[in-house]
Image (cartoon, rainbow, N blue to C red; front, side, top):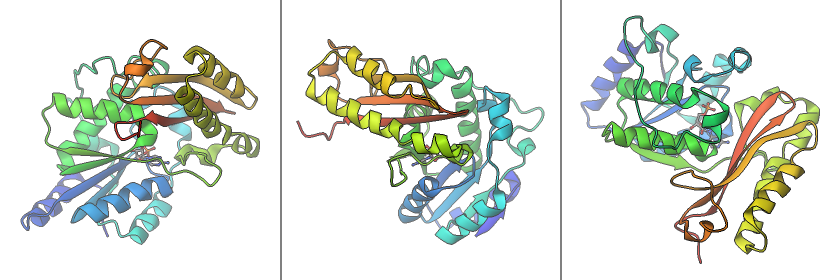
Length: 291
Ligand code: AMP
């Protein structure tokens, strides 16, 4: 496996590799790699000749300084994991490589309402930071395909919209969420959970599964279902921030009047488990769901 910390070195390497017409898959991460990340990397390895994984804790997408400071960092362990799965290239850039002084990387984009709710309303500036770093990383790596986790459902929708607006030819593959045996979505932040919070956290996915069942049965108003789930999740150390049933494309909240017409329905939630904020979602209906 090759390790690069400088943009120029990575690009020189990729330029040579591309001479042999190789397809490049790209998996951007913030490190503290777990099986969820490795799943994305394995998928890219299967579908491309070269896989690049970046590890960069992007400061511009953190709206909370404590969260940024406490974000787990373990580059040695991460590199060992990447080598183990057979990743071709690890890119661990210095911050000044991503944001060199004098380079204006800000983006003036319209997220077309995808950022107004859920993560967007609870983490001001978060998606502007995500779009900025994704655009910058794509400009550097220039991959054919970008692999993203469905765990960050809203992020996938926003990145797809950004790429469309930029008329980018990069394909986006959204990979299903990898979970612990008890249902908890794998996340780098899980390592910060206290024992008590870790024990309580599987209730998040349990609540989402229950919401899915209730929405599919349509026996009660949607509002009652979300109120029920929020109540279920309000047992300390859990504290829900939001749980919404939304249209999977527009990300606008659904009501009893609109839920029938929606082709794709998703329930998304953010829950504090002690002082760690976790997000998760479940697809209730997709284009492939049998009627
Ligand atoms: P992060 O390091 O948290 O920024 O995540 C990097 C990529 O891995 C993002 O596209 C995430 O959506 C994806 N990811 C994180 N956790 C999981 C998981 N449990 N299953 C699948 N993908 C994940």
